[in-house]
Image (cartoon, rainbow, N blue to C red):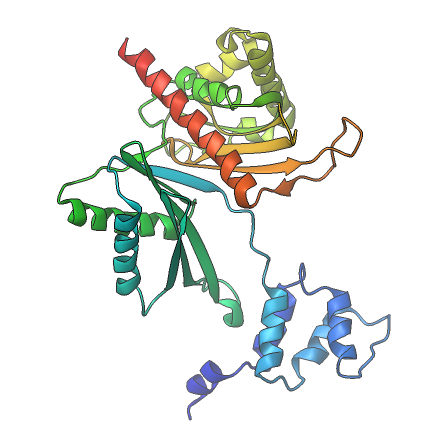
Length: 367
């Protein structure tokens, strides 16, 4: 067996060393000591992290040992941002299931696809797949991931809610193609985007109206935002602009947005905003807090942004919440990622608000 084939079938000392070294946030010094104790080995408190890793990496590790190390190294699934698209075609639940089965059949050798009905008019499709990242150490270059899509058909159209990832986007494109074959007609995808809004005022108005029109919530405060600008693409982008680097300027702009929303002031009348507008700046990402008006009275931290800020495309959003402390009007300090039905409802509010705002802005343009 040649050297290359041998390395493909086992984890070398170097692989284990690289795995432990790259996983400091998950494989802590405490974890390393616990690994040693499991083998009846106790290190001196004076031993450094490097000492522990060098020693552990040369031990004999069987398959289960290596799998255990990889699992300890893997980051927990992050609170993924979500997005949605609309297909202007009505499908029955049975039709959605048939199309998903067709996709399942096509991908049976590459992905694990399962699905189930949700309610009377929706199907949830789950896909497990392998994603490769060759910038990582060899043992974790292949990562098992999953994408869950909710496909709901109502009022003459089909809405697909999904993670804001490239993989989910590809699944939707595949699904759309199968719908077109099924319906024997071309079907455009309707996305939430502001590429047709060509002035800073219009782009900012989208975010201003979005954060102040979430149903059943009172806006509390804007906590963060990012900007970009129209202009030469060779110039610095939003994440590298002087505005982003100047924290005092950033905080002042947040104050301007806060004032405009709560006091009904004209944003463009602000001296600070006027300077930004003249430079072609507009908001591309915003984070805000809002209090729920009815039970369970959550304090929610909403996020909304365009991944392609300058183009105003690839809209994505998320929500975390804090609960009330019993018998008080105070809230817990930490925000928890929304899950289950809470997640569906909160993200649905952002989605509905964004589409309504775009409809109003498009109507204003046509007048």
